[in-house]
Amino acid sequence: MTAAADLEAPQTMQFKTELKQLLDLIIHSLYTKKEIFLRELVSNAADAIDKVRFEGLTNPGILEGDTDWKIRLIPDEKAKTLTIRDNGIGMSREQIVENLGTIAKSGTKAFLQNLQKAEAKERPELIGQFGVGFYASFMVADRVTVISRPAGGGEAAKWESDGQGEFSVSPAERPEGRGTDVTLHLREDASEFLSPWKLREIVKRYSDYIEHPIVQAKVTEKDGKTETTDEVLNSRQAIWLRPKHEVKAEDYNAFYKQISHDFEDPAKTIHISAEGGAVEFRALLFIPSKKGMDFMAGPEKKSSIDLYVRRVLIQHESEEVAPPYLRFVKGVVDCADLPLNVSRETLQHNPVLAKVKSNLANRVLKTLEDMKSSDFDAYRKFFDEFGVYLKEGTATEWSTKDKERLADLLLFQSTATKAGEYTTLDKYVAAMKAEQKEIFYLVGESRQLLENSPYLEAFKARNEEVLLLTEPIDEYLIQSLSTYKDKQLKAADRGEVKDEETDDQKKQAEALKPLVGVIKEKLGDAVADVRLTRRLKESAAVLVAEEGAMSPQMERLMARMGRGGEIPPSKRVLELNPAHPVVAKLQSLHERNAGDARIESIGRLLYDQAVVAEGSKIEDPAAFARRLNELIALVTS
Image (tube, rainbow, N blue to C red; front, side, top):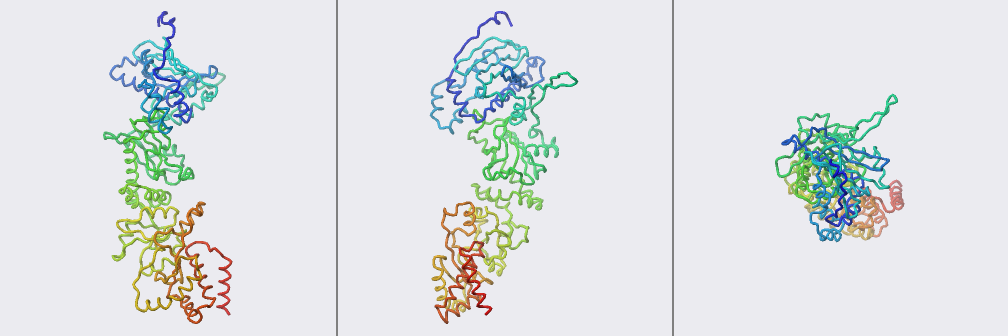
């Protein structure tokens, strides 16, 4: 550096756009966390090192013998500064003016006006056209100084600004040689970023897999002597970028436990390397063996997959890379080139990402299909843990192809399986009798309750299988699925059974009409109707909902969620078994004395009994107990 250059006064320049207003928008509207500034500056430093390494392939002299790549963090508590230093490509005076003096390539007021007029949710896409990550520095600094020397022996230059519309450029010295120092003069409310512990935590969170070492000085005392060494803050182990044949099972398992905080090995590992096609990305996904504590978060959690771009974390638990029903899948996706907004916190809507999402979903479903066909016991264990998510996917997936794939992955208990064992929709259809046109199901609280339900009596008599659904999501699933392989799914407890009647049965039904009318009149608004049925073989009565009406199970679920008052309970139909002795006795009572009070009493007992059988609560338990006691007294007298 010459003496003349040493004495040269800084040259003050104006930014090419209205920086003060743009900075206000960047600081207050784009970034939700101040700590993001360090991620941006570390990423810039890593890019600078990558550039000089690339140039050095064809021009080794440009490396100046310095290939000890490092990104150094230098907090200075006394000066209240934080410096990010790299030995990358560096910048000349002209490059500094061009790169740091221009926020937006438009250089017009229209750019800023568009930003100010746009809704907050639209701003990221507008700003996403411009590279301004460096200016996140002003979230924590009231002044930023940059000293840089370009590779190849050029002179160093100094850039400085308080972010208020001007910057200065002057000659400088950089004893470290090629590279760049970005020094942030931190504001009082940003002093936490002088803490080595805080810097370590931020690097670990956002930049742990950056290829180059990110270091800070570590001072230790031993035998009365002070020793300063470099502490590497990032692991640099992006194993998803390594070829599959180089990664051992224990490496996969260790990485899974690191990102998931799980103690068990994953059930399945999916390592994807999509290269050479229209979309290039790497992904490392894991299907857990069991639910972790994070699943207590509920449906608010939309993803367990982190999105990286060139090893830099862009979105934690990104909703953009997998459908919500796969939120049990943990892992990372790394795209080599993906258009992002300036803050890297809100991705632009891009067809590349849509293809990545489709590819990942396909690979996960293929892995589950293979597990189901080759190791059903392992798949059953998986389904016990995560089957509810596949049911959610079946109910919400808009793609017919994926909906069918998900439906084939579902497991169900049924009247043809033992407790704890499962069938599938495909097996159910294959076992159907030729005359059976529908897939029957029954929803309830538990298998035990459903197995003893009067709704199953006719199906058992005909030896027809009924799916037993006991999870809260099953009602939603059935409503959304509705058909499978052209077979309609039909509730066993809804609608009227249309059986052909014999002449004797027709005569019996005609004779019972007056009794049915009396019971209907006495029950009044408690029921929608009273009718005879052939669905019952052992029970005297049952309540059924009409086709399309809300099921009792759904009503109970809504009541538990505090939404019972949103939709009034649907009235159900009381069906009586004309072949049952109780109905026959009632008929005899009615024939002798149509006004006998016992007809109403027993009719209400049958209704309450049917309420209990469907799993609901009796509105007046005291009245039920009184009528029951009267009946006991009558029988035992």
